[in-house]
Every structure is written in structure tokens, then in C-alpha cells.
Length: 508
Image (cartoon, rainbow, N blue to C red; front, side, top):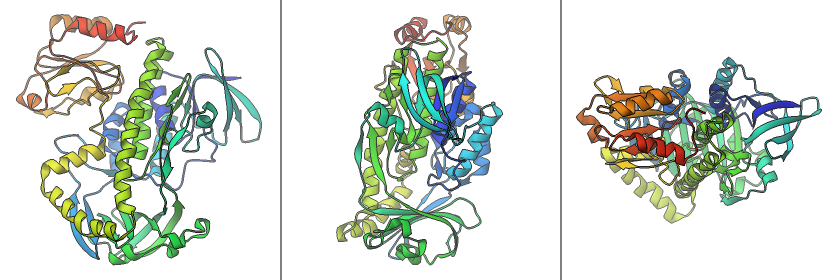
């Protein structure tokens, strides 16, 4: 009987991220996947700013940015003409150290995560299928089948289902998957194209009822296409070829497709599971929520599920926190998933609905709005905050407490670089920490030393105030870098009350 602390089923970006963050915190994991190897094709393309911020914890961000491609401009086409454009580089320059959308195909991303996991001594166990599990008082007993067809038993304290939208684990725990499936059939293709003007920029094209997104992922003519398969051609999707799907939008751009590397069709769903946690079992990524590809949110949301859960699991396994801490995973991530599904549903429905009124709105009204938004800096910044997931907060979480000026418990800490001092530099560790923008009190410094919690002080500057931070206030940051507690008085009593209330023991 092979034993581990956390059994992870599924080695996509979500499962790999969970394995990385747990292993980095000293938790023993097994990660299994029934596939022969990492994916060689992929639909997910974008890595958002918030994910890049969190990847600093494992020193992965710079390497991924170097390997990826930053989209400079998104062009909107209608009626064969470029009607509007949105500048993508530095649009969030006042919001994040990564003020752009990075294109890094999922297959390459997965391979990168696998290699990082190998450096920590963990291998993905391929051709290993999860069959079922039984829960005991203090563990789960999982039945697995290896590549030779032999069954084996794995004993673990916790089970993490990162096994996709059809998750067998979700079915076994009896959690519903409420939502719906969009009516149409969609395609995705990896192509080499010429005639794209300007080269290396992203394109969104509406041509009557046809719709297509074209994303570059290199500056040498490689593009990912996503589009609609019209109803009359979608009856036998398994036989469909790229040449048979609608090409009106492609032709309107005067683009030539020189080579199709791969092509696939798929249905788009929008669903959220009833439970993100059932006792010792957790659902993450597509096993917990699926939504339209609008805004490139899906993979990033799964990755952030993993980072949210990892520090909580690590604390409980190590005896640094009591079991109720794990309930906050569902509270925080389910609420966000539901909002995300609603938002992407509205955008995707607008882009794909057929009919003369919808065509008019897409071809005439939408370009006017986009053009206006591109000229208004505050609108572009707001759009960046939504897409980049830097607006995500956990205000309703039991782990969020206190408020001072514009910042409250549950917020992402404002990024404020001042005179070459980056207040995000300390966030490269996984652990609790305290920030004071001003001068921390003697008691607070002593508390930090006693509890082995670093207290970082930043010389006060007016820029901190503009960002909503308060001079000499205490900001307790969680291991996943979100603000846990804000206290304008910098009170050690408030700190102790916070940890006692949430059953967290800094020195178990």
C-alpha cells in the first residue's frame, strides 16, 4: 500500500501547480494521470498578470515571460475593415509588475511545470488511472490501475481532483455540475499564416454571423485560431476538417493559412459544481468549474484554485491549523467561479449569438465602444483589472478582517513601486508576513521575531497613500499573498485574535 499525504489526480496545469506548491511547503504528494504524456495540443493560451505575480513564489515568472509572447495590440475587424484596436502592452502599468497578457500555449506551459516539479524530486505517474476511493476517519483509500492493468491501493490524508470536466471523482462524491452547454460547435486550430497585418498582433473578426479570434504566440507567423462552426456543417464534428468550417472572417482579413498543424472541434460549457470540498476530497480547475474561453480565464482560475488550497492543506497536514481552515477554500473559490461564469457567459453569448440584431451590434456598436475604451485610460485599466484577475478579492471569507482607507481584508495587496523599492519583492516566499508602510511599533517587531513571521517596513511615501494604504497600519498577508488582516493601529492583540479565531498556530 503506497502512502502519501496528498493524492493528486490529473496532471494538467491545475494538478501540476498544486503538486509544486505543496512539495515546496514540504508536503508529500503523488500526482497521477491516465494519459501517456503531457498534451501536445492545447486550447488555453493566456497567462494573466495575477498568475504571473503568484508564480514569483517559485521563481518561475521570468522564465515563463521569456518563453512566452506579449500581445502588443488587439485589433477588431468588422465588414472586412479594421474598426478599432486596443493597445495591450503596459495597459496595467500602474496595477501590476506584469501589465500585459502573455501568450504561452498550454502544452508548453505544462512541460515547463513538469520540469520544475522534477527538480523538486516529483515525477508524474503516467498511465495510472484513478478507479474509486473509500473514505475512512483519518484518510482516504484510493484504488488505482497502472499501465500494466494491475490494481493498486494508495493511502492518503487528502484527495485532490484535478481530473477535468468529466471528473470521475466529482461523480463519486455526488456533487452536481449545474449549468448548460452553448448551442453551437466551435473549432480551435494551430496554424501558420501569412498576410496578417500588422504581423504579430491579435485579431478579432466579425463577418456577419461568422466570428474568429486569431492569437499570435510567436512573432514568426504562428497563430491560434478559435471560431464558430456553422450549424449546417456541425452535424458530424468527428469528420470535420479545417477546410470545411466557415472562413468568412478569415477571408475578410485577407489572411492566407499556409499550414494547419492541428485542428479540433469542441462544445463550450458553463458549469459550477455544488461542492468544492467534501470532507477529505477537493475539486479544482475544470473538475469544479468550466466556462467559455472569453478572456482567457479558465486555466488561470484553476491554477489559482491550486495556490489557494495548497497553503491551507500544508498548514493542516503539518498541524499548524485546524480542519475548518479548509472550508475557506470552497467559500473563496466557489464565489469567484460563479461570478466568472456569469461574466464570461455574457461576453461569449454576445460574440456568438446569431441573428440580424446581434450582427448589427457586433459590426457597428461594439467597435465604437472598443474605440472609445481604448482612448480612455481609466476604462482600459478597468478592463485590464477584470481580465488580469487582479480585481479578485475574498471580502466574504472568514479569513478576511479589518479595513483602513481603501484596503480591506481579502484584497490583493496594491502594487506600489517607490524609488526602486518594490513592495511585492517579499511576496516571493510562501508564508505569513506583515507589511507596515511607515514605522512598525516595538511590540509588533517583537511579535514577529517571537512567531517567526517577517515584518517588512517601507519608508512612507505619498504614493502609498494614493494607492489606499495607510501610514503605520498593519497589513497581515496570507501565504498566497492576499491581505488577511488590516489594522490601522498596528495592534499585536488584533494579530493574536486573528490567528486564534481561525485556528491557525504559528508555532505548533
